[in-house]
Length: 518
Image (tube, rainbow, N blue to C red; front, side, top):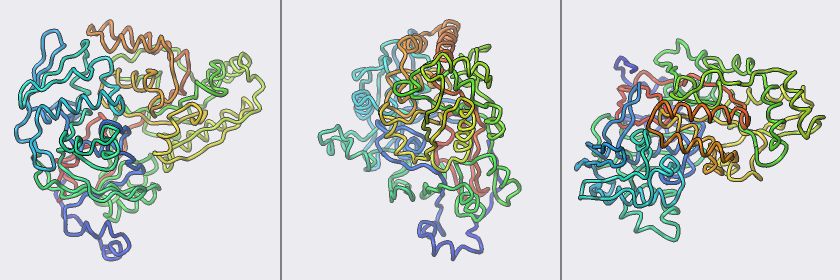
């Protein structure tokens, strides 16, 4: 936990000038308003549809789930549920709800709302529904009392309590009143129907999103009255805003940022290990990279050492699962730069002479991704292949991932673990049911699917580990990704922020409501 000395929040000598040029900042003067800087927009407010770290941050602060995940190491703690029990066979869970929980309209959160929310999530089959695919069906969660919820699983699922923090409960009465023809999706696209500590204020895509503390907030802790999620595309601008006190917490920081802010007065650097991985996925469904031998050639051609040197505070991945996580297999036949092998596999492909151009996207504002794309550009030259590099904003990335026809040849992406279990990475990033989603736009292999499904249902840890080894061996051989690296998570915050505690699970989606500003 980061422990800070209490200090008064300083507007700074340039405060009047800042306020005049930035209305969002002027509103923060004299109030406990926390400003976060991010490069990423929040394109959808529906907790049963949207994915990605920005929407998940929104949901954790405007909605509640049955349980929460906090601390380092991560622990499951009460959310809407104040207690729970589990049957001996691992198939039945019973949750008792907190009678103090209230939706933003003042109505209590009941077991019927929980039943409704899970049924809607599993009916829509979007958002976090993949986490319980094959584990729960629409009828698996029932209100067995006004404040009692019974969950009946289709099969044992070891990480159940670890995935529940992402299953958010909606106000069923509000959604039903705005159901429309799409199960309330149009309404929840831009409206909140939750019980979280904050309600929605202003929403200006590309600029800012504002959260306001709910009048009937039932959560205990923190003095934050409002939060501004400020979109800042350039890291140099973020550093300046942090220095001037215009931003309290910066999320998308890079190695050069951490070096630049070292010793900056009133600013705390946060660098912690977590399960956030970076990889360059390939369009295995359409175009030249549908050729496995070409994918292997490129995997051997890539300059991993240059990638590591450009990253700083990182380690190279050794396969599809993060090292240090249960199930990660040692001794995999991983790819490292070997131009002899690269040319050998290129000769076996349908593109042995090269002479064509491939495309790659990276998230706009992510300087590290841009650099790693440039390393790929240089690496491909040895195979007589050119590369078209395209920066894209998050909503366009999500849209592009929906089809092999719209996906670029390469797709560079960070993925954060929502729960500390190999099922998180394996299912989200490699199961074919995720095709069309940003975690796994196109990769599909029936044998990989089978191994993932068997592993998530297996309760014997030794057998699970063996299934995950087989999964990793198969995926490495398939070469659907350039397996990149695991970076230290890098944040920066003003020392006026109190009670912040780093959690390695989805660290960039942290709850604001327990925090205070001095």
